[in-house]
Amino acid sequence: MPSGTARLRVLGIDPGLAAVGWGVVDLDGARVVYRGHGCFVTKPEAGMAGRLALIRDSLKAVIAEYEPSEAAMEALYFSRNVTSALAVAEARGVIRLACSDAGLPMSEYGPMDVKKAATGSGRSAKEDVQSFVRLVLGLSEIPRPDHAADALAVALCHCQGAGVRSALVDASRSGRL
Image (cartoon, rainbow, N blue to C red; front, side, top):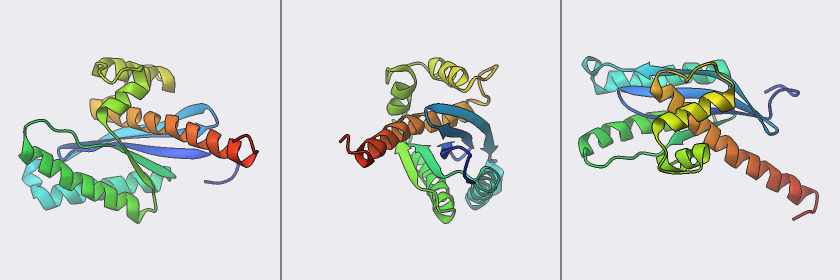
């Protein structure tokens, strides 16, 4: 990013095979600024290779448009359906590769970590997290679809950690640590 702009631009990703949510925010000091969000939807009739290619190409287009400096993705969570977990794992691999090809460092956060960062509780309802996203980003309504709101929540979770990392680096450089 050119100097004088935001210090950190984060691409948040809610991975899936049928739908991949994305959201972009800037962290400028303690201020978080909304930049954009959306969702890629794949169709089963495209076949696995076609669906993965759509995810890769769509994500590369978002990266080219928004030029993030870091990426954050929600970690894989599944309880029973191993088959769908394997398909999502393949999509996550394509997402990770697209980010790596673009030189983006990738962090991962579990669903409970994202909820806790948003509301203070890892057991919060999805609606509470979405309301947090809307409030923090100053949006007039909750971002839609849900996958995009989830991706923005992941980006905000990453920003909280980035703010802490930045403060530690500043303190270390100034001799306060």
